[in-house]
Image 1: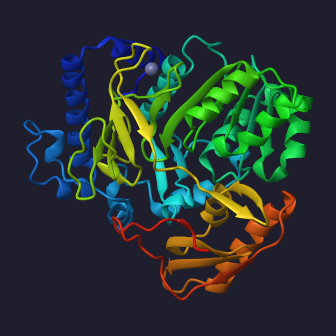
Image 2 (image 1 turned 60 degrees about the horizontal axis):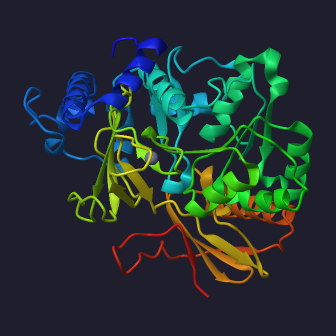
Length: 449
Ligand SMILES: [Zn+2]
């Protein structure tokens, strides 16, 4: 892919908003053709996978879909740059952020979170980074301070998992490292800190732009209403989990500021963003989302899907083309905001709540506690009695199960004790994760009492 400047990317994103449906179809197909040709030429995996595809005459649906387990088996053949390797990315991700440049001098590299099983390396080229940056600037921050996420002009706070392998935290650290003279304008607050400390830190810091997970905002809404939390941000941004219409409304009302949400994944980037009616619109000029049923057939507008195929038209180094993800979505078209981009509702990443000793917390604690565990292919955490959890997993050969169990238990109990919960027992089951009777999927968290 040729180099693209930020000015060109911003122009393409603005032009994309004005395209008629039929014009957009052509633009998207042209972009897809370029990506498919490039992938066939430079990725040994796609050369084989697309051997039957006539590059000058194909439709999106002709391309055979791909899945994470399949691509993970041949990671080094999947990427289009032979210098990018599975081990190389993990080594890079583990190195200190402050002292490292881009991966191989030109790429962004992260790993997927453990919510979908084993972590996967993800490398993005400058084309992806610039276009997805331009999407944020032109669509997510529309009508707001254009320097909203720039620490030179605004104070930025993030309530976040302060772990550099988590992509949102590593981006935060990268911005901080790139702006050493304004590093006092950036504050990362650990989610593990507990509500009282989070409130105190926010009151002291007074952010202009606050980012958080939807599951952490509840206590802050209450604190703001009680007058304990006194902040006046220009905007509050969410990501990673589903932001319910109720939370959207409450945050807007209580903090009296813009509420931003985006649907992004490590694999597909910034796929959809909220308008000021609180609905997510798909950036379908750059990211294609195909809702599918359990057999991979397309699902009509207005119906819930069982999964999606996602295609990112911007990333040439690690192509994501009709890549399966288990998110359940529903697409509709009309929004009061007048946007031409389809609306997407998501049901796939609703993180369940856990109740221990009568107190509730977000299930994201569970997924985070397992996120760093390398030798697990799939897992399920069952809440089997008030203070007991059971880990069911498929492990890699030679995995140290005792260590995995201990690490998980330590991480989980650390969070619980910090947040005023009682300690829990975590035991290992000999059984693999149980599949649901409907659809046969495994859920990462189940309550069984
Ligand atoms: Zn809208």
